[in-house]
Length: 472
Image (cartoon, rainbow, N blue to C red):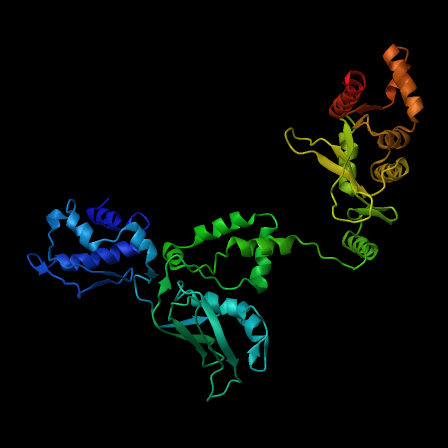
């Protein structure tokens, strides 16, 4: 590291920016150019630091010499600020090179048609015109976050401007203003004139509102990307100068991104009533899926008991292919819908098969959400699923099916998939265990109970017996 940078970091700490280092070094070099001269100051004289806007004063004469920079403690005592003192002062940022006070830009044809095509009277009705113009201004000034005060469109005449607008930087300490004029409609050249000094408060960020088509595009991105990840990627794309300036027009904060992500993932309700919304959804999927035997994923729904069935033609084919040589699973889970007062709990019943590739998540091929959990309701779900599978893929019957110890679920699976009652199935299992089963009995599918559920049930039964026989 150069000796100059070591001096600056020794005085101000590691958080000082490169731009502040350069300005401070140039300033000290001018003072050191007066070799042999004494710089004296009394209590009334003060030295103002332009970078940090802090005041440094001393009452003793100091001899500047390049040979004593590294080890001279008097230099640090007289011309440095401690880290805690610097943090308490207000510091400002300004660009290293002066920005031009005039510029010209031309809008592309697509953006011009969006803006000029929406002009009604003296104003543009398209809300994206501010983002379009703001993006064009970044070619000449990418440090300021500009806000618009007023704009006006006139009929093209020789005496009036076709378009004019004014605005200023959103930083409260920045005096930078702009004015845009369009003199001729045919040329489409916008003349930009700037005034004022660029001066942003350090450690302060400002961004323009996220709206219009820009917000809509970002919503599509945020459907599959977390807000924090999107914010980090946007920050990485900013240049070093723009990042230090505090302008975050191209990198909205996480709060804004989270809200946009919630809006993107929010389901649009087609109708106020549930039955009406489901009916419209069913008709819409039929219109969008022409030529399919089973269009969409919404199959059946009911108002009493409240239920909905979901599967598609593709999931039925997956079920048919996987169950030829592998097991299928069926289970239910609760607490998927909470906060509904005075109603039975909703359960989600899922028919699941293993993924063809090892290590991948299982595939849900059929879903049934209902607040009725008796054997009749579950039979209706499994029977409808089996009927559609036979319609799409031919006769479908799983060779092995695994479920928990729920009696209604066991009875429904045996009745619909195996076409036998619980009594006949237990009898067949007895013949298999005793070794007297026929070939026809062995050819039929079998139902297994989940080992985890069985162990849990046995544990509960054992705890009940222990309490009854060994309680004090």
